Image 1 (cartoon, rainbow, N blue to C red):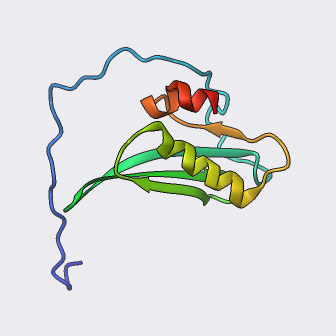
Image 2 (cartoon, rainbow, N blue to C red):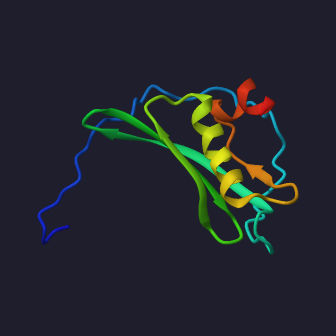
Length: 120
């Protein structure tokens, strides 16, 4: 980056007054940091992030198989709604076609605690 004279652009500052709220546990931590998995399609982890672009915010969700550490599903949208995370999981199911139950682990973010995600 130095040779190409490429520099990061600071896009925003964090709001120092944001302190979060009380933690709400809608599902138990079944994975409990058991990140070493012996077989594929047994444990998938998922999360989303946001990326600032010149056209606005872009939201990215990724589903990773803990056995291979490969991305098995992903989606990008311009809104951080529940369909963002559901579509990434649908892609993972479509690509991998698991034959048995898969443990899906995520944080307790609003997309993963909403009724759409839980009913799906």
